[in-house]
Length: 290
Image (tube, rainbow, N blue to C red; front, side, top):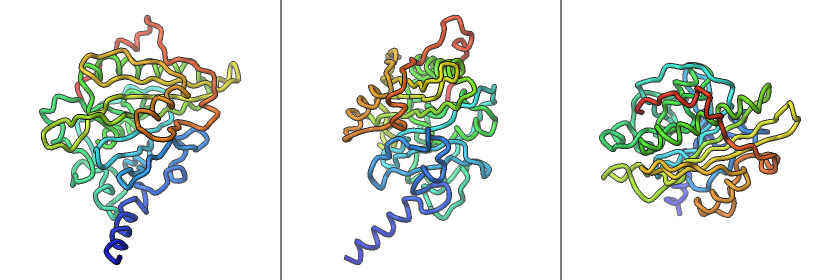
């Protein structure tokens, strides 16, 4: 009984009782969620809630799976585009390894509970951003996206192909429809059956998905939309879905009783697909290898 008590105390400490690996990011960094309502937080001690912080400034929020060593989702506010420089260094989250460590991302450290650069080396997979560099509105925000807790193994053809287009289309959709309104975006992955290499540490997602919600002030209506794509070498075109439809599919894929992305209002909002006119030059940008 005493041993069980000690184990429970240790799990409680590991669940993030202080600073930026937190017990409840709805209260700690709720500004990244519509009406401060978080997406579903999956049950289990392996799921850690992170307020992604660099140089003492939080930029977005991530639910991270320490068993599979990939994020479940990252949530952020879209505030416009800036042509930021891409980093060559990837950070880790020190508090995932030791709750007494500092709150800021670090370029190196222990890797028992999260992926490392070594995991990806010679794997053939890209480090697929969830909160993407392209949607960052400052260099600091762009740098903060280069944390391995915000990345999951992604086939290079999909990352540089259809998913690149989706990131472009998401930016154009919210820029056109959420003028003078805050756009909330959440992007995630679904764990698949394979790992990126023989050490069986980092699981490859079967799907990447993303959704947004905002108020269109011109029509004075709440709008939302979602996309889900299969992570495969075939670079298949992702499917457009209303938020309610995406939630239903994620409920099935995660094998849970329910899965929510936003406050209920976004679920019932008018569906505006994540689209971009073919002639828009944004679709021609090139994505370097991650």
